[in-house]
Image (cartoon, rainbow, N blue to C red; front, side, top):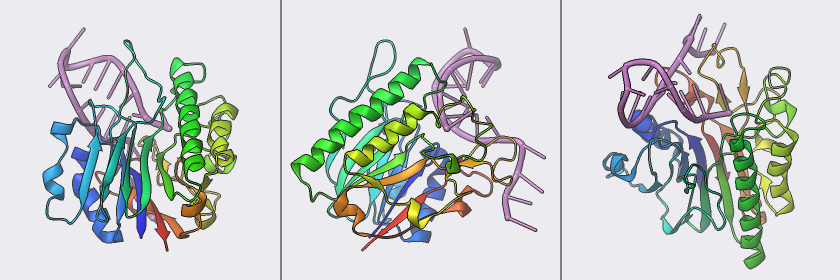
Length: 262
DNA sequence: ATGCCTTCGCTTCGAAGA
């Protein structure tokens, strides 16, 4: 089985690329982030006849997460227990959706950006990760053999190797000790990044800013990951980042990450 | 070995992205 995650930066603007990507790589399950649309705006009709089912959660033009699967979509869950809220008045954001796909509990996660160190959005980001970690630890406590894939845009570059320039990111979000600690705390909860050993760095990224020729200049970040429970990690045969998808007109600023399971 | 930012909704510029 082949699973993948991709921050598409608008499903409506990118739907043709998404369908082509699924076909080109023979993907079974795709976790999508930043659909940037409401339910009534999601291009469901494009997926009719492709053999894929879709579940989507979107509230407005921001965020939005979906799962596209041809191996079934069962027991859909929107958000997670204790998920922090944002805004005034505080409200849930569309940053997490989950479904059972071919025996794997697949999560599509869009971790809050953080914006700036010291910004309230950074507190929100850290609280969001902490709440998710607590929940995710509980899922394994309930069933140590569960196959769980925490896939998405984590908005954290876990190591210095995951940033094109540590100097350029001095004092910036995505690389702070607090964010990296929050990311690695998932290891203590029983989840490991299943992609890195198959996509070694340095210079291996999943995101390149649209501005200043970041992609051709190889100025990127590695921030999109699949964290697997022990039972899922044991099934991982390989992983790859589809850099080709970042090229050309109409590309997302993120590249898809693909994981092959036995 | 790719191309100088893109998306959305609408105060057609501003907010958000990272």
